[in-house]
Length: 337
Image (cartoon, rainbow, N blue to C red; front, side):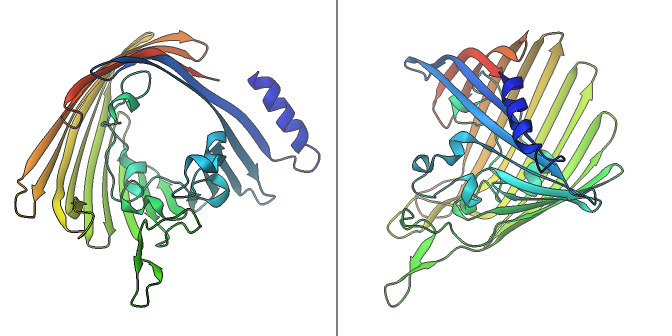
């Protein structure tokens, strides 16, 4: 099926754009999720378009988005879609690096990433607790318009820079998210630019990266490293936050608790068609209002995968996290087309 779709796309483009290509791919999954009380069936299928081209001068360009990202009704509050630049991404690449715009990850997330995923839903069944909450891209600026990401690599060193546009997504469906009221009672945009820079060094069997981000008064320093030794791999991440608050009072807007630190380790072992993975993560918060104390939250996860070949993988995972105050699990098959 993939070959038919790809051939059709290439045929359409061949008339006037010999250097352009549109590749159609997809992913799917089916299985069972246990939420701590009950087990439910869970399945999905998605189609992805990858567009690439090259100018006469050798400049590469392209874009990618999923079909479900064009279903505007799925995101009524933020009007997220690839057509509006708030889902998917487009990019241009040449001698001086790669520039992407759209729903891009931050500089730190591009350089460091997250802890290893477990389960056939890749962590979704447990709320994606393996994902680090980066200040830029994952933070309060997610309701803004297109983000921008720049990447440049020289020998073993890579440099990354990213920023939001400092303006919330506009449209009739936006109802107060990131907006305020002026003295005359008019709704005004209160968004501000979030920016992030990161550097990375890669050797033959390890890498280390450091990132720094700011958004309003909040800041973030992130350090990550990963090593690969024969069939083993291990990865560690540490993030230190400053003035990154969690608002509990919707009426006053007062911050009761602030994020303080996030750190964790993950490990994996690959043996032929079998992959074993696990992670541990701790989030520390500090109380800044009366009645709120410092606290910490732990999350543990283990999982296994068996490659069935042809793009099909049998996978399952178990996660225990303080955020859910329960142990959850999933088991199923995931596909790549």
